[in-house]
Image (cartoon, rainbow, N blue to C red):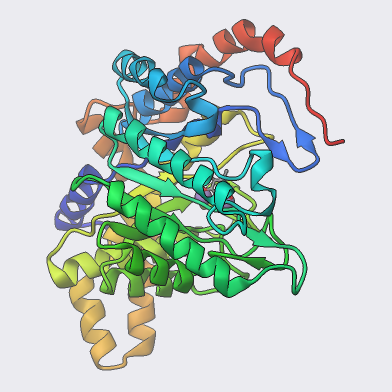
Length: 397
Ligand code: RM4
Ligand code: MN
Ligand code: MN
């Protein structure tokens, strides 16, 4: 039985929860062997905004969209006005700005860690331009992911590259306004298969700390080795005031970008629990950007995104149900079974009726997925975009 006080706690938690959608999650994406083209996929920025607008319309918790500079701003700063107009049209605002330092041919041997100073400069100026775009759009977070690394032992000087990274990140930090932050994402491997310059949370932490106080770490849940304890990383970063944000997705093997909670919902629950437990203990709100970083190659993209958002709300609500007073007491007494049961009880609670009630209270669809299906939007965009998407090419070699 859920008490009225628990209901109140969950509603309060949900009222404070928002999650950002990735523009690239609505486009044709694939594996390294090629793209699977979908008739309804978005191929323009206007279409990405329109699709993201649908997710926000039916879920009510996704008011911002993460943008990728290379894919979404082919004209650079000039595209800013269009982005602002699209935002107004679809009830969204520009969220984190993601520079692209991995697709250009010049980045074959790296960007910030490239041995060629001219290429390092080129990479830096792209990031500085991305900050200007963020400033123009009123975006707070600059989200940095580097593909930099090497494939074979002995081929790169790892210490030199670390120094170049430090220099580059310091220069990026110097350009940020007081309202802005830079979030540094780490990833153990892929596309580099021997060494990656920012390979794990410790490296990201040290680099963010040396860049300056506006630099924080971004945890992409898919960017860890199997069996790594992600919630421990989260707890440490919270304690150090260095946790800037998340890229949520799920994985079975590597950076699979699968739907959040599809493989291991308890993992995402444990992350939310660490955050809410920290907030309860300190009385402070953790300043974290929750973002989705997923690309659905096989599922319909908008449906999959609505499914993701619903899952995130469910897991966050479950984490809000943990009785922190009791848990803290059990932990203090090393009452192991009781402490663990405290978590398990919350995780096992069916929060779906609560979520429906909460959505209705806020004038939202109580079942976002079926509301979206009934709207006819998917059929409409399938008809409108099919021909264009048929003409797209998907090649591996
Ligand atoms: C990476 C990483 C970044 C994303 C790129 C496209 O694996 O998760 O966040 O921007 O993919
Ligand atoms: Mn990511
Ligand atoms: Mn990734």
